[in-house]
Length: 484
Ligand code: MN
Image (tube, rainbow, N blue to C red; front, side, top):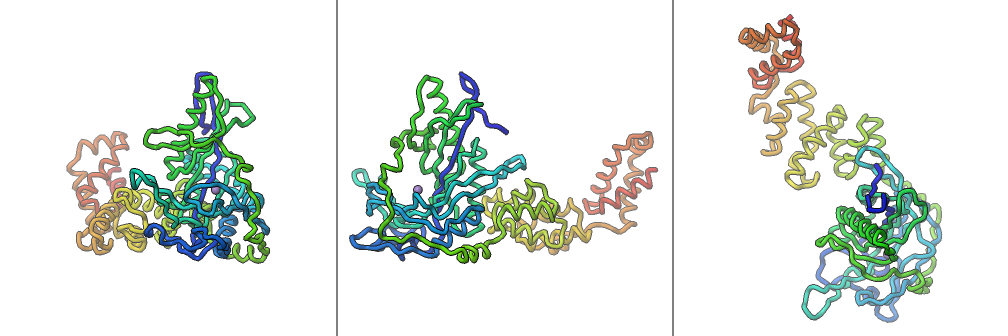
């Protein structure tokens, strides 16, 4: 669906590109041996390199290189066997070096692709322009004291991957789908934990608008450091509206950096857009160009896990699931693993329904992830076993599942304890059917005069009389025979 914003002068469309900073999963920093764990006491994970003491030299962390290559391969991107670290010079109190080590001219990863899974089940490709490695800065804290600011250098020097998309996104929904998919890929790869609320994945949103039908791109504004998927989607909508208002009031949108204020629902100017030359980029003389061999890259490629897109294709092919269901199940690795355990030995579509409808509802209600599910995959699988061998009906299975959630018991024990076994004994069902027919002369008359819809009413009555335990296909067949 096309996302169009109506203005006073006509229809507008939005052009969006994203720059995502993803913190590399690594025990130590990009150029030093200090730890990277989140939430430590301020300034306890700071080496002399991170504090930029004079004369310190950076030493590249090989694990970070491997993680960047792994990510590039997961994005189906070209890996550059030669890349170069550059200094990006700027002054800020939380950057004691006075420059950030980054990669401008020769990034480690070139063009790649991310496939969006849209809400209607369709997919679309978004181009990745590049991925480069760089250091994170420290953190300035301005809200701890009325007069002073504090600096925490724990984050200083932590390895980041900056992943830059092409301006291929066209709506807030696209942005949401892109960020979710990218996060899913990074988590499958184990290269970034994707926790936006802890800041380990942050995104800069580049937004411009143009009249529908225009080819040329207009000036863009960059909304910096948005820290949730929902905020990124909101930022697009708010910033696009602002730009349209500017144009329609006869003004011009200037290229600048803005910040997103989620409380007031607005974006505000931060600084006019800087250009690469403002930073006096030059190759870092302390670091040699990074040279990789094709063999090194191939070895990493051989260890890649099955990624969400391939897994989704497998679920649609071998399991016959819809694009939507498959997409939902593969989004998180834990969910996919849970599903596969439940589906083993069962009808995959039935298993998918149970996970997506019944289990997800419970998880949502309890506000927990699948790893904290009150019903394990094994237990749910055993419940499906009871359905499969006709021990219980689908109706009863839902009740049993509710008790499993509430009491943490196994399905078989619940069925035994509460006497919920399905009645498949012909005699018992026949008694119930005969009784219902004998007590319902009016309905029998209606059925015989051609109202076949009333058959469902008879089934309901028999199920009621047997406490929901009669085998439904048997009840159906018997009613049909007897009402003839
Ligand atoms: Mn950056």
